[in-house]
Image (cartoon, rainbow, N blue to C red; front, side, top):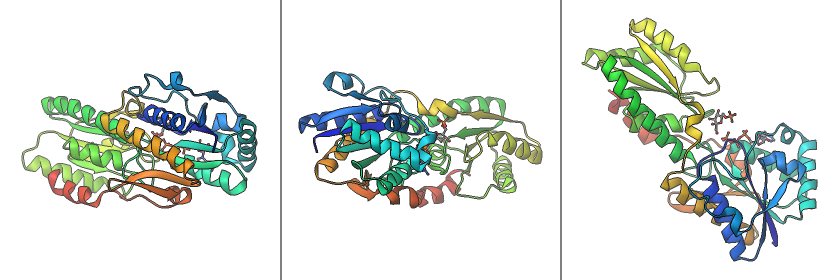
Length: 323
Ligand SMILES: Nc1ncnc2c1ncn2[C@@H]1O[C@H](COP(=O)(O)OP(=O)(O)OP(=O)(O)O)[C@@H](O)[C@H]1O
Ligand SMILES: O=P(O)(O)OC[C@H]1O[C@](O)(CO)[C@@H](O)[C@@H]1O
């Protein structure tokens, strides 16, 4: 292992820069040459790389987004696109690559490795969705969840003052991690998550029951799932059933930006260093994560084939904490 590349792919996540910085510093400490591949798989397919020296990663630990930039790249869904990436990896002379991204990124990486004789690939989970199997938390989740809680707190002030029902939509394409944790921390009255069938009757019943015991306002946290904007429809139907005024707030990409929290900087630093150490140990085709406080290496295929479950204890207590 002499020369490695680092890329960020999929949605940007606060803490990715801390991870890039840690990976570069760990590599330099072991006399590895490092390049940054720009714009995720878009840059991997074309071989768009820049040298990463100490100067390039100075003063970035506190920045949201990713200094390497990222993309959702259509070419990588095709075998031809992944073959072009393997050729570019050869041209760039890379022995290993650290890939920071979510489950889609690791799906693509698994295919790249299965179809081509290419560099060693080690993943680092970075996604505000937190939906990657093989790690308790992904880089970016904590910052995004804190952003959602702050929004819920602000909305609660106005909901209480106007005696209104609010639907607050958070991100989470395949999973309800953001909704569940921000819902618990923000004291939400009800949750809508992709892990459960949507039931307007159940939402209305639970909100209505709260009103009968004296609540005058309520907050429902909705995970966007596969239909961003779905809260408008849900709000209309629940409002009509309860004959109660409601408003909708979609947090959207606000949740992806901003300075990373302490947790995301520490996790990013830990996993960035662990990824380079894994490459130095000769590992490939795996993702480094943190499980139960320990570092863990999970085969790349498992990270997207296996479904990471929500915390069952949080789901269980939500039922009575929200009453
Ligand atoms: N099934 C797949 N086959 C090949 N490549 C894929 C596949 N899924 C995703 N990719 C590649 O990985 C990129 C990133 O995936 P995706 O857009 O799903 O984000 P992600 O890594 O899951 O991050 P996030 O959780 O933030 O959305 C895609 O744009 C595409 O280039
Ligand atoms: O606009 P984009 O970049 O496609 O991002 C939207 C998606 O990315 C995520 O935020 C994850 O980063 C999902 O929750 C969401 O569906």
